[in-house]
Length: 147
Image (cartoon, rainbow, N blue to C red):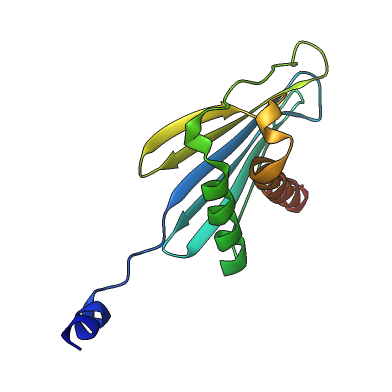
């Protein structure tokens, strides 16, 4: 009984916090570059996008929104399943033509890692692909809202 009471009195651990930054740089496209930042802490989260248009004025588009509890849970789950800090960081840079260089910077309690997602085989299937799909969906949604 004492054990059960002790367990009840231990404060709940906050949910894992994470910072993700999906950065896209383009050769020739509507945007010169776009960056999606996703941050979670204690069950809450935000997503923000900054895009620089590929025009003479280099117009910057910005938009931010809060993440739903379901989105936070999904992102955290996919990050855990993806083992992003365990390697698989090499991809391709095709900006010399009409291509893209896309990178994902991950910061959690263990440190910071940067993975190239464009042309990276480890992002074509499984949880890494699903995480990238979620992040790209957020990026495109916020781009449309900012235009």
